Length: 362
Image (cartoon, rainbow, N blue to C red; front, side, top):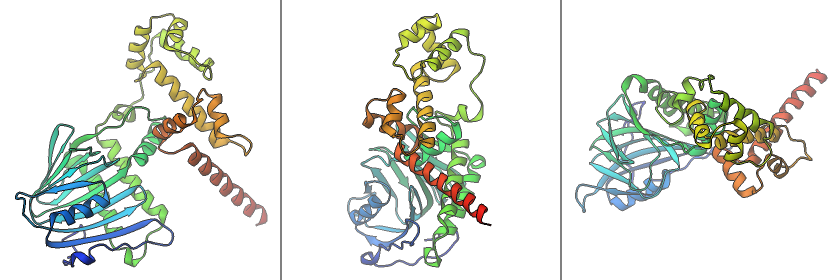
């Protein structure tokens, strides 16, 4: 196997195929898997432990498989380099719950996902969040580099880029040509070179997170998806008067329960006209706009909350009465739980206080 850095990895017995090295300060691990003429079920088991349960299919039922793979996992991020000696189909039996990027280093591969089949050769890449029945087709002697970003990390990053909650499902499947893919591939190759040998010591947590986030942001900016237009240009401000009146009414009564009919009446228009206008000028329905505004207020108050102010009280104030449902919506929108927002905010305030105290004592 030749990784991006070109190092040769010798085959090792399957009994010794799994090795994990954990640092003291970071949940990071390196798994090495290298087999020659192995049983396909044994290889399936290893693949299934890294990203999601899969089944492998070879051209013939009794075919053996030769695979070399190094896999690095760091929190919500995965990175691997893989070469297979035979034609191989990897079929997913469960969703990955992550955005996966594959770029061939040698040979070619193809992806079948959501009814679309995409091919990639060195210098290009494909990306998708694999669902059951989706497949990767690896050509014999194909070497590829893969990255996977947990869904929570994608939503969190996208939410920060938009400066708004992510309320609609994020689905992506497509390919990027060599020109646009170049930056992502360069970043992936650099991350691989930095992390593939953990025996020399694990880089700082902040560096690992920063590198993966840089790759993810680059991908979100160049890859077409549901939110692409919002990333490259603001929504048109030239909204009709009834849209503006609807927004004014919702903001004035933001913590009160209201339905689309009431909003339309106060805006002086019909429900259908208001729905159509909001989709055109705000990219969402009136109620989705209202929920975004409420979630933003909730997050702001949680970030500023004192010890006596609970998450439940803040949520109820803004119209979220079912705590289980609220936590789920909040996590979908921001990529983290309300408790995680609170903990991070308290930690940030603690760091600021520490700096101030150090300054006074200097």
